[in-house]
Structure formats: structure tokens, C-alpha cells
Length: 200
Length: 181
Image (cartoon, rainbow over all chains, first blue to last red; front, side, top):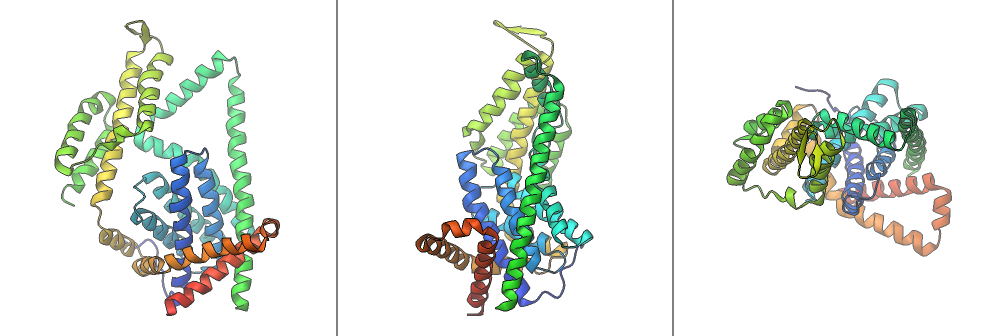
């Protein structure tokens, strides 16, 4: 069953995809492993921010359909084969982030606005990704556990429930804004790289 | 892999089954994995496993719901204890199953999967990625050293998109030359 077909790829397309795959893969292996072992908070957000820059810059130079999914697949495979231990969470995140970006750019085109949207959606997804993975591993019941624990804590400190909702909304908004800014940055990197490549 | 379908069935089963079935099933599955696949069970060496155990099996029944049972001086909710134990066991089984599936997955079958869904060039790109990886690594290191030596770190901070674009272009051109050779 063919979902997408990458056709007529030039040699330059193949090499450029490989280079972006190598850059993203190296970042995942070195920085990802370092963050995983040091247990830095928000490591998923940091890695996703880096992924957004790489994905959007790559799209400026890899114009063919399905390029980002291919890039994500290569990066995920590289992460798997480089022997840093199998961890399904970042593996799935890499593939899903590239699929999200590909769908956005494929349906509404590659422009600065879409780059901002893609960045925002990817970072928002990063926030939800952990929760999705927890459902896979622990079951839907984990949500009721979190809910009950939050209610217990808020009631014992007499914090209104609405504060928690405001906090969660602000947290999601921060991710969206951050994603948008990073997406815009990725677009300007891509545009400059494209310009430089033309002059070379 | 021989028992791939059985392992997938185990994953699906523990995801669907209620906690009171998952709890007795877990030691059976883990013992089978240990005997058949020599699964190391090193998940029990991780601190995060015990943290998960503490949250789901100890803290949860003590904090949540009406206290229905007593153990020594501790009042807890028995129903939530079973639910928490089920969640913990489900996670252990799924993590171990995925680990076994991953160890047994052959690179050729993964490549075949990508080709089947329409990415005919997957294998080609992957081999080229391995080919350019040392050159990319070297070029990245050299770029950072050059920036540090030239003392232009602040310049890079002030114009990050230009620095990143130049770095990407140098990597792309260097890799094109490497592959040509």
C-alpha cells in the first residue's frame, strides 16, 4: 500500500536529504542522549524546537513531495541504528513531527505564515505527545489519576480549579507562540540558505 | 522474527484487558520473555520504574478516593490499588514487548516497509546519510572551532539565521563534494 510516492528525485535532492538527515540525526544522538541522561526538564520541547528549525530549513531546499517524511524516517532510523538504546517516545516524535509539517506544507503551501503555523502545531503536539505515549503505556486511566491528584493538591492548598485551567492554557499558549517564533526563524534560515545555494 | 504476531497480540491484550487480568498475566509474560528471548528485565534497574511504582501503586491509593481498606496504619482505596497495579504492570509488559520487537526487527524489513509505503529512495538516502555523517560531523566541529577562534560568537548571536544558513550551505556543498569523490 503506497501512501505517498517520491518521484523523479535528483542526485542533489538525495544528497541534501541525506545531509539534513545527518544533521538532525547527530542532534538527536548527541544532544538527545545528553538530555535524556541528565534528565533536563522540557527536553522534548528543546529537541522539538531544534527539529522545527531543521524541518523548515530543509523544506526550503527539498521541494519534492514527501521530502519531510523521508527525512523523518531517515533520522528515526539513524537514531535507532546508532546504538543509543531504543526509546519509542522520541522515535515516534521524530516521525510524527515530520508528518505534521509535510501535511501542512503540502496542503497550504510553503510560505512564512505556514512555517509559523507548522512550528506552532509541532510544539503544541510536543506538549501532547507525552500524554499520548502515557496512554499507550499506562492506559486511559492515567488521565483520571492526574485529574484526581490535581484536585487533591488544589483543594488542600485551597487553590481554585480555574487557576489550573488558566495555567494549562498559558502553558499551551507559550508552546504555540514559541513554536511560531521558531518556525519563522526556520523559514528565514531556509530562505537565506536557498539564496546562498543559488549564488554558489 | 518467529513470534512477532504473538508479541503484538500480548501488547494489544494488556492494553484492552482490565487490571485484574493484567496483574496475574504480567509475571507469566515476563517469565516467558526471559526464557524465550533471554530478555534482561533491566527495566527493574531503572529509578524511573520505581518512581512510577511509587506514584501508581503507593501514592495513588493512599491519596485518591474513599479509604476502603487498612494496611497496618495506612488507610487506602483497594479498587485504586488494583487499578494502579494494573497500570504499572501494563507499562512493564508493553515496554519489554517493544524492546524485544525492536531487537528482533531486521534493518532490511524496516527498509522494505518504507519502500512499500512509497519511499522507494529510502534505502538510497539512508546509505548516503551514513556516507556523509563523518563529513557533517567534522564540518560542524570545524565551524564551531572557527567561530570560537575568530571571536565572532557575538556576531553569530546577533545574526543567528545568517550563521545557521551559512553553516547549512557549507555542509551541503561539502557533502556534495564528498559524495562526488
